[in-house]
View 1 (spheres, one colour):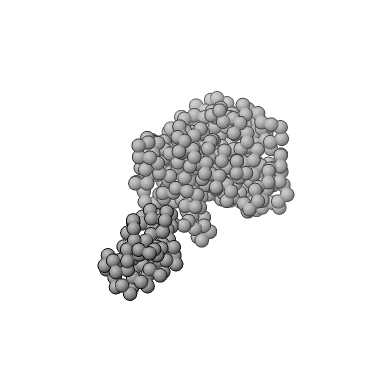
View 2 (cartoon, one colour):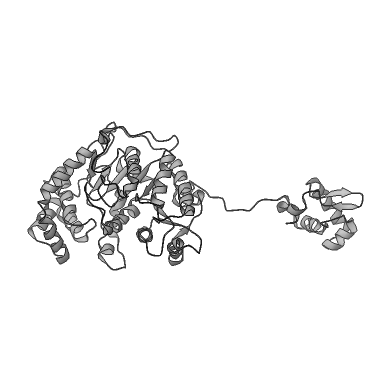
Length: 444
């Protein structure tokens, strides 16, 4: 990507969904990402003070993101109380109750006028074919608003500042809320093993085939496997990034990001050109957790971003699913720790189990795992005793079988007729025997 995208990204018709997904293909993207062919929906302006324009709110939210990292509790509270333009004025005037935030705002404001920088970011996004979505837009993903009530019992600013995004930058033609409506996150280790990649590919491909959006973070390993499998299935995938939507990070996934932008969505809380700083990945994870119906972790070390993401998933009471791994693998430690620590986590091993967890009641049903079925599985108790009494080699008469089985001769004769019809025994001149080539499967 490197700061540019193919011409027409913002106004290309999005590809059609595979048949049977239940999601119509969008038309051309407009300024807020809705298909032009669709009738306009009601725009909720309750978060915008009277007298303020939607455009003012949008630009102010962008400027606020330049002054403070997304999720900041103080900034979000100020915006909710007074509106984004008024909150921006307060920050720039120094009316900031949080000393740490005040220092951060002073430092960032010294780099340039945030209002002009916001305007420049909006122009740059327009050239890229990207757009910025705010809560007043029809395609704002409402699930993320639940972050407004999220409280974590762990320390640190990352766990304190978990409030909803002020705005989201988007590349791709799909309406944002529609993409997230039926979505599942798949997260895990960057240094994934062959086992993790195999399981992720199966799950993501199957979810995409069933019309579910696959959401991940665009990293190497499990993330990349999930995105690629969804693309291969002809499904929709969303990459939630910790940098600008024009930054290919990791650079080795640049071609993958272009494919996602063509048929799915690239989403970020940071404006174009923003660097992928380490702490931003942890900030980003709360959006993945909140915007989706549930999340699956496939391979995670004891300390990993995937485990942190699942902590937010559990706190938000989303569906938390964990794929177990070998007990000898360091990449299974985080997965097994999650399973042991919280009873709300569900162990999943295949697609039917995942669908059963995330689907509506009765929408999917996963058959319980069963071993290979044998003819003797349907036998009644007496028939099973008679069959067990038949010698592995040679033959035995009814009297001998009755003595071994502890049944009457009459009962044995009656059961032998049923066993013979079922092909489980044969009559020979010297008595009753097991059929050829069936002894091992019948006996065990």
